[in-house]
Image (cartoon, rainbow, N blue to C red; front, side, top):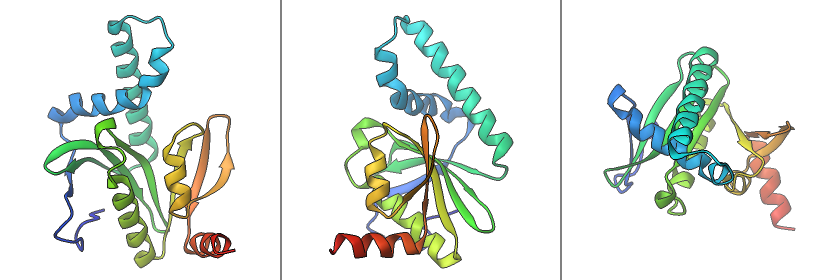
Length: 176
């Protein structure tokens, strides 16, 4: 799924398909999403690195097994690798498997722009957009602001969907 076929020339965001030589960067992005957890462990740095490697490998194995045909891309901002975006598109859905930005790229509108373009693409194709997010992930506020609604809650994650009617209802409720 190419989000930027129709994008503004002004955008500083591009995407690069992940290749073998990109794995150290992907590991860095993944570790940045788990850093808070690691602070509360007594693991050595070597043990932390091993743990992160095993977790990332398990995650990618799961994605490749369960989401055949998914796209795995590096988010590039102003010509610098900034994060990762994994998408899986089916006949009626665009699933955001993962969108993660390194901390220094967060809060710059990058995630908002990417998600807005995914939503626009889904609207054109008459598809819903879905994702899973951990309960404590601050990005959940962004998803809600953009019109995603919680559908199912598990012990660790919320499953959220964006459908056009969600946005209309949110807009109506905010105007009250």
